[in-house]
Image (cartoon, rainbow over all chains, first blue to last red; front, side, top):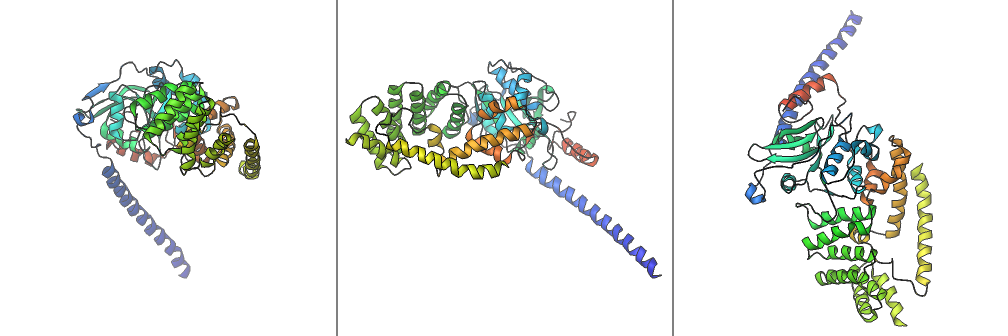
Length: 327
Length: 133
């Protein structure tokens, strides 16, 4: 009798456990659906008039490359680079951006690979309206989506090439399908899971319409580091034209001009930087050093004195440079 | 291995760089050319020590090269790939390459997950199956 009871008890227990698990599973699923449908609403957008964009747009002439295996990264890059007049094939890009053991490509390398083709990669700010603005401006946008759920991710790169505000449709070259139309709601649900990562590739000198000065300058500084000042010079000119009151933009232009051997133009740019922001010590320092190189000693000393007087981590450098003038 | 190596190498390299900059300071007339503060340095505002940063950068670029090789990238391609990365991207790759999402469009999943995903597809929350819109 006693051993019968003993045999019985575990079975009851396991049945109860199974029932518990089933109930928990159903509840969990319901909760998951509620949560998911809660966050996956159609993106709320300002009217096209307020955003200053057309009702619908389609960027002509973005070539389509169907992805093979897991190579949506290289395929997406080839599409935007080809559209930007860079003659490069998917096969060339694969060894440059694909990670064989991960069966995929990661975002930093997507950005880096663009730079190798003399194009600046700008990561956008992750607003739905910014994406639409870029499309309206004729810039195809590489987007990263998680087509599946966060627990079993299915990361994917595609190229957005158009939209229709009336029909609430996004047009994408995606995977093996050209001109795929996706509802704003579904697109945004899958895009939101990558924290709305998106990138445009533009020749130096062109800027995305949706970015602010900081984002633009970070992108161009990275481009300059991977290439050289000569390649980046048109981009810095574009930044100072778009944001003439931004001292850092003038400072960066000054450095680029100096690096390509135009010290006069550099001094002028540093001068603009200090005009815009008189307490920018580092601009005074570079202005002083540039003027010193141009043998304009009096002006150089004045600039270095400004740099030395302002509290900054370049104060010591300024003091050191000034010592050359004391004897 | 790399971590240990960098722990040993960092202080050494820092020491060398500091010594190096002393001799520059002692030089009677250093040419101003090439000594301007770079845009990258000025942009990274909250930098504790530019020297330390630069050394970590060198080490993590090497680190990322090794990681890429481990991920199956042809060693012949690795150097150019890392050279195109910005400092911030190198840091990101060095610290969290394994956690970064890799765009690939595959899902490794069981049957019941497929059913779940089919439902979420039909609800317009996901986009796993090409035939759902």
